[in-house]
Each structure stands twice: as C-alpha cells, then as structure tokens.
Image (cartoon, rainbow, N blue to C red; front, side, top):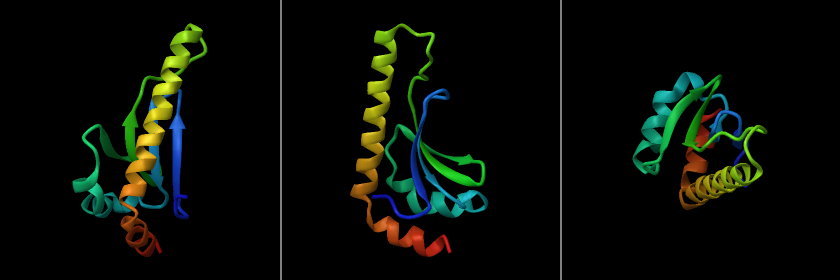
Length: 103
C-alpha cells in the first residue's frame, strides 16, 4: 500500500485523480525536486491545501450526465487511479526518502 501520509484520491466532481503527499504544502519545491524527473507527461505537481498532489486530470463525473457517459468517465478515472498506483509501485524507492523527509 501507500506509506503513511499519502492518499490516492479521485475527486470526481473536479476531474482530478491525485496522490496526495500530506503535510508537504510548504515544501512543494523540495518534493518537485525529488519526483519531477520521474513523473509521467500527463501528470502535474500541484498544491492541494496543506498537501501537495501528483495530479492526473480526468473528465468530471456528474449525475446530470447520461448513464453511459458517466460510466465512460468513471472507467477512465479508474484507469488513471491504476496508472498512478503503478507509477508509485514502479518508484517505490521514493517511499523511504519521502517518509524520512516528512518528519
């Protein structure tokens, strides 16, 4: 799983799938230095309240959409979650570095 202090979140109304690094908000530059060279082209590093997020944009999901369009968007978001999770697994060595620096 993800280390303590990290969350994998689908913010369906906003169209964001994030890995959130809790408590890193004031240190976004440091986190950028650690992970920027490794992130996929379709992701970005953004502030998220007191956290920093590795963000993948997806289409927002709303109840006013036809059911088939909702399903398409939900499946695309699930794929984005899977992709970010796989990115994290592929770069697991970052877990130790980030956990040490989050103290």
